[in-house]
Length: 502
Image (cartoon, rainbow, N blue to C red; front, side, top):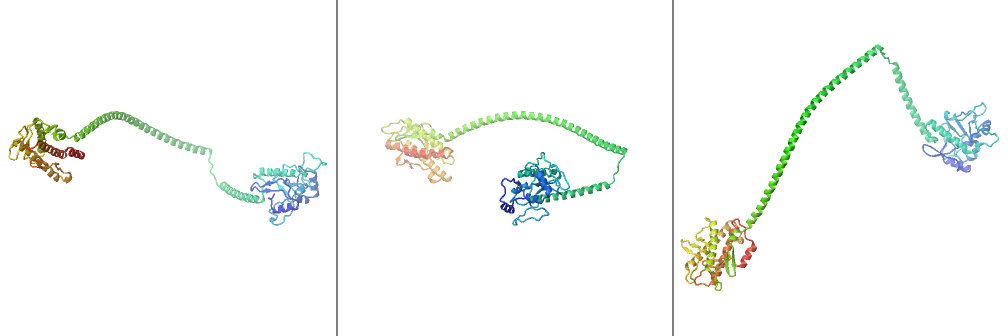
């Protein structure tokens, strides 16, 4: 078998082309197409008795080899010559030169397939001296036409031969020449390896045959066996003793661990009890802490409220009722058309005297309290630097009230001295001048602003305005006192509102 080539195509062109119904075989290794070639050239060279044997005996168009051929050859029928024109010749064997692809292909001397003996044995042959071997058909009719006229019958036998070759060699058939060569090289290499291994095994076998062995008698064998058994028993006894020793140690360890486990369980129970007690106490302390924090928060709120509370401002609320100034709602002054009782005027003077005395006494002895104010309710008095005491209450004569006028003048002087002390204290504390105390109405002797505080030979309107301006200055000093004695200072809007109202 040979793969189709250019030479096969050339032969096909000469013979009129390859029959398209001709079965094709493929190489089972490289999957290239193979065709059957050389049938007619082989039958031409057969002897006459072989050809006549082919005409007489054939099975499905196939006959067995002629003279000098064994049962391993399957010869294709010559009657298929008409179908073989143009088929490329069989590849040359090892003894035949290989044709080049570009050279014209010549017909091969014979076309046959080599089968192993086991495969050839399926054909029932009979050898004769002058004739070839032939198949024994199941039915033979000499007068009938030869079945070899059907080329496909010959191919069927060829296909069967391939199957037998495959089953005997464990190699898929058919194979092309190149694949056969590769397979042959591979098998030769495997044969060499097997031969090498065989030689090595034979050398080992010879070496073992040359060695001498001491064969023990039955008695000696039993003795050696008994010794081995005794040694094994000793080892087993030692292992048993070691295992028993380990078992006793493990048991003692287990008892110790059980004791420790009981101790741990007791400790765990005690721990759980202590933990529950601690959690209960912790919860109680948290509740107490929350209650204390709530009280602290409430106290802080009250403290902030108290800090914002102006005690002196509430105790000595200075305001005005129209033109007349008031302190704690007591009017200080009177008008021709508004007759204010002297009891109310005296009470107002008593509140003013108590306020100025409180502030002066707070900074004593730092403040030289030269002019003493004696708050005595509705009957206050003033002592001058010469220790002369004057009554600061009425009623008095409008035309002759010298002592009352002097008492009011000394009150103004004491208020001015306290204001000067406040300014000096601001300078010591590095208070900016714009934030330092500054009286809204200037005090000079018996005058506040441009109005005298004397009642004698003075108009009631002017006297009332002087008293109102005096209360305004007193309230300004009061706010300074609150800001410098840890009391909340007055806001700027309150200052502006106070100036607008006065």
